[in-house]
Length: 84
Image 1: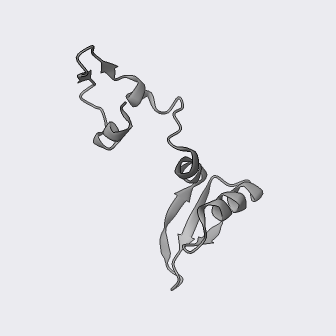
Image 2: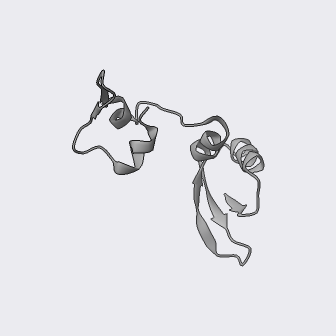
Image 3: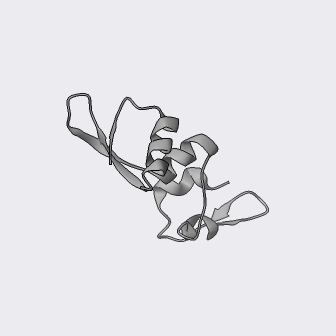
């Protein structure tokens, strides 16, 4: 499925759900591929982060009484913002 980059988030969500698709190519105004979008990413823009069984890394963080955190050395840096 192809979506223009000018499409609003809710319209893109509706289109993906109507087509029963999880991913779409985003097309720029010049007709080139601007990127890929996932339905889950669009939903998270509306309702906030969604954690599921694939997000084991965030659940592996231990918060200590002093507020410090213990996390595995393999913890993805980009997920630090999701640690409460």
